[in-house]
Image (cartoon, rainbow, N blue to C red):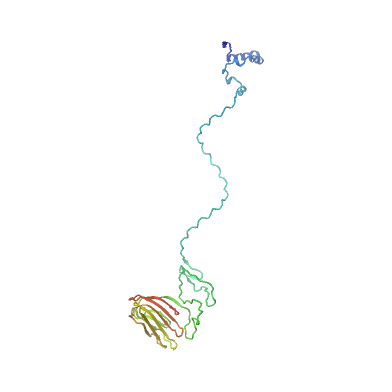
Length: 308
């Protein structure tokens, strides 16, 4: 059945009537009039929030709806300020040892020597005032090791000098005092007459102005009849033939006396000569020489109880 809605008062009319009732009849009368109006007489959507008091608006809150979809990521924010430096950390554990490096090159020894040495490295000498242990006073038990060469201007005594029936210094009345031996290289680069190849205190082994001849000469006169000098040589020629020679000087031989030991023309290529005072255990020299066939240059080595 059709209902005529034109008789329903408008919201504005309702508000106006309420104001009239408040003004004419007071609050109590207005309350009674309000009770005469229900929700069916108010048009839907005709009363806004502005017409409601705050408590009514607060009660209009509905239930929380479902979460919406996540929004897109916003832009990156600016970096924050740097924080304060933290306290130092504790000491860490020691790391493992590294591999051993390669050995470096050997350094050079230089600079002045000290202590018992004099001069400069790498070739220092022994100071004359150095306290050197005297081997004749007591035996030294130990070893002396030297990686370089030994150079001495004196004689050397090596070995225990025992084990033979006669010691190296027999202390005979006419023997030379034994101080040791000299061992050195022997070189003769000139065949001129009088060139000395080797010596003792009384005899000289000399060249004779030929490329392969050798002679001996007495340098001192001793009136003592017991001083006797001998010289002997043994060698080989370029053809393999033996080349030998021997000379003996009697007692009281005058100084300057000479004798041919190896005649020239033998063309020897190796020669070993020994000469000196064998009768009285005096000085003796041994020399070994090498010579190229047809040449005049002699080279070898010698050992002698006479320093030269």
